[in-house]
Length: 208
Image (cartoon, rainbow, N blue to C red; front, side, top):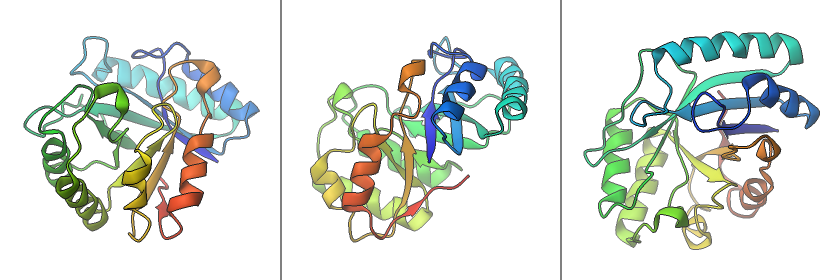
């Protein structure tokens, strides 16, 4: 199994890359992605930190013998823009980290004009996003058309059930993530796997 949404101490996570890799090995995870927050946040992953983290990832891969991808989670601003350091990432997750009246418009604009792989924690209750059935369907249309993955986020337990029910007849790409910020949460993707089995019999799992 994989966990494609883990934060390290290079942003707001508590564990080091080596600690995360060791935990993943103990859990028999085949693949993980470390996706620290980007430079729109003061503690985010800039170019210098991205290069240093990449060096640690290579050491961790050799030490523990698992696949570890160098990723980033970018916040999406009101114009659908993201901010990236100058680095070649394996995985780019885009998410909205604030209440936004134009929530769906932000995400749709973002995935239309940026080369990203995953939309993270869609409709997380943490941010109180407003619902809009028409725009939710439009987002699903775009995800399906472009091939960007919808994340099943175990940390936020989202997307919600009624949104997931809309997905069952669609050919979507799905990404599995714990959104772990603490070591004990790494690999905690049980909720994601449960929803994958319930709603996504036609979906394809993201492979980096």
